[in-house]
Image (tube, rainbow, N blue to C red; front, top):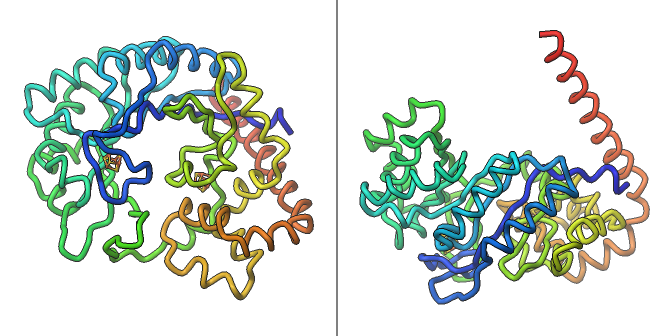
Length: 345
Ligand code: SF4
Ligand code: SF4
């Protein structure tokens, strides 16, 4: 099965340090957190991964706050770009307090080879990075030719970040451009004191397989390789594949080929797995779930679910592996069909 593992993405979690300290941050990031990768480490690992997995087409730099790496980030972007990869940065937009600074940063990012910028914002984020910075960041990035998306956490009853941003005339103008969009992201609580939000779970989405498994090679700020960059990754030991030593990333990543659970997650996703193994009891575990990674943490950390999985997983092996094989086979057909059409055009 190793030959079927052809990841398309590398995610570099550059640091867990952040200029903000959102209360429900999945990595508990804040300015106090220490530690970051440097460009020498990142560049060598990107070369290693690209050589091992030619299927890689995009690198995502995120954190914490990736732009805290400053020149180290720019060097890493340049290197990723020199490998022929698309490059995306995820940021909270702290660097765009003033328009002149925003334009300087956007120019440096663009000249280094950045193709996409994702800006995360919303009620929690805006306690640290105001809406005006987000608007500056969007205008500057789009002006420098960077495809830009703003991801907004679901509002509380009192907050209205999504509509406020959409109503701004400068953002209205950007929304007419092809390379700019805004989308709403489900907000996931990490602590019991979190204020609830008006979110109706999208069950169709929750019941889908996890597209990150076998598709994303993730480097953490501690130089570890992870199976995904899901919001709960640091809460699920099974996602940790081991420490990168400069030559072993393919070995670590492909070690998952023996792990049936990864195939199951890929094909059915954690929400459906809980429903399958817990039957009529599933509701009490998933009733508050709005995000797949939340279900994944519940699946891996609830002793009753783990016990039931261990007792019953064998009866699901044949159907899960068949569906996985079919998914791969179909992918192949689509690719060759597309190539054929491109040749004929
Ligand atoms: S901006 Fe993002 S990384 Fe930083 S504290 Fe908030 S949620 Fe965490
Ligand atoms: S659902 Fe699980 S495997 Fe998938 S990204 Fe989230 S934590 Fe990772």
